[in-house]
Length: 386
Image (cartoon, rainbow, N blue to C red; front, side, top):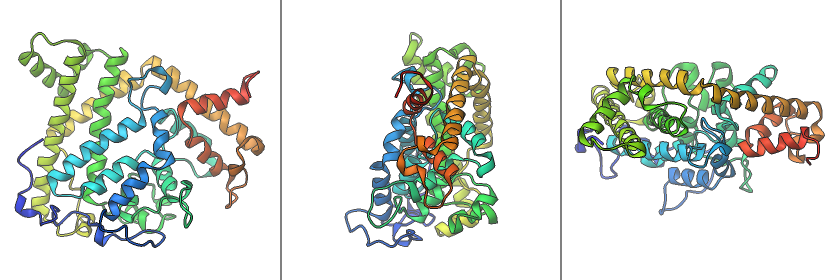
């Protein structure tokens, strides 16, 4: 990680720069609670609640690119979230931002993801087209606001505004209007906290690089193909120069870790320059400024090239598309069956308090792991299953 970050004088005794979100000035929780006590901050409490949630545990069996049963060494939503949190904390520390808030957002950002990755989301969105659609960022917020059942006094996890704000990475204006203050920035064109902006790009760094690693491990893409992509080519050439005899997994790991290091250092340096130029003096001034967390133009172009390569060579590989088709059929048929006969649903989803049965069905399906969705489909459609 780069040593040329923000000047240390820019941070106070707490280690936080003026632009950092501070737990003592949080915009609060939806339901008032007593402070957590001197041993931890409000944002640490949020992180702890997320880690202990049911939705977080389910991420272990939700896919990234490869469905859970295809191998034990591929990334899941859980390992991805942990990698994002590690990258986000490092960047936040270097920039004088709040590490605890960055970590909480990173750990929660995929809680609403469906089984079967983006294929599952697209399938569930299509099923919900007549009922308001489905978007995993909105579902992540719904999970922490409503669906988790852990506390006597309220539904959900009752997280701080700043954590909820960071979870909501994307939101259409029509949906934002229904969310109150947490959705307002999508209507007025404001930004989230610096910590949320850090998580957005930490997410991108993590999934691009672990998809390279998983794609190579699977054999669906090869090093020869990746050597046509600038970011990978530069770093694999450097590794081969330093370690001529290196091959196999060590060559891949050494290359990927160097790519991550380059991206993180560039992000810190570029963002530090933006912060020095704009000089926000509070989290609210960050919200009213243009986006501050960014890559340099050169690295942004290399990231875009890598994303294009992965989309064409990996995500659209015929073996991935075969599983995608199966996943979409599983989710589509589950949704149709539950809408047609609500008695097939577990009791808690049959009569939702707001009467919105399609949304309750979407909640049930979105909460499934890959293997649970496959088993539930077999129970409903395979002869001899129950």
